[in-house]
Image 1 (cartoon, rainbow, N blue to C red):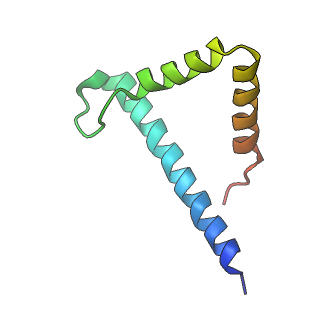
Image 2: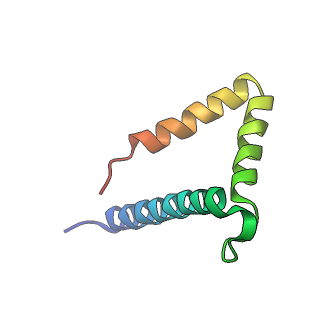
Length: 79
């Protein structure tokens, strides 16, 4: 029988996957239709560009942060 922490880990993994899918959907819709998509508040693409720019402005620390985030996402096993 799976423990509580195994179940919690599974739920959190599914929430993260759902969040990533929603971000990807927001990016695609904003690229196709611009900011006219009414159910997506804010500027998804602009915010993403700002995060990448902020990490790039931090030099080596930003590069290390990007590497850690990419490692965390690539480490996950789907399912």
